Image (tube, rainbow, N blue to C red; front, side):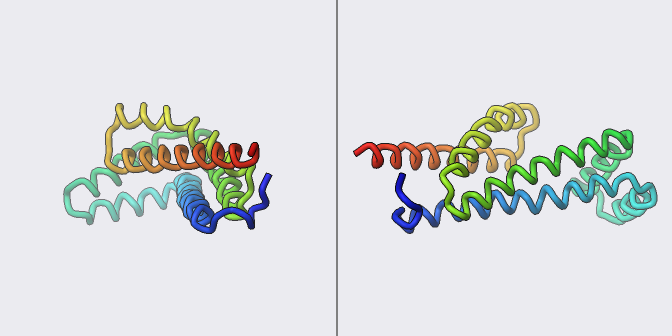
Length: 161
């Protein structure tokens, strides 16, 4: 197996971009987990409702009110479970991102397997609740999986020769 220093620099740059994408997801998930866990505070929900009332009528206000209705309808146990699942995904993406940043082969495999396994769920979600953001994430993840599969196969062929 070739050492990471012998790989082409441009290929390493793409791995770093994927790593930054994964680490960006970690930051978003940590912020989400923090927000979910804070939703147990009734006074916070009241303040957000009051803030939402100041928004102009439209999509933004509707999204905030729907989100608050969803979270306020959850039991404390469900909110805690949702926070835990969010933190678990953040940990997984952190392992992928750091491993890719450090150019570890296991991270390429892990990212390929995990990202590919989530694509069917993303497709299902896109068909049931379409959105441009969901479509963009699906396309980005398909490109990542395609690139990593190509990269792993090319490295394997190079090692055989």
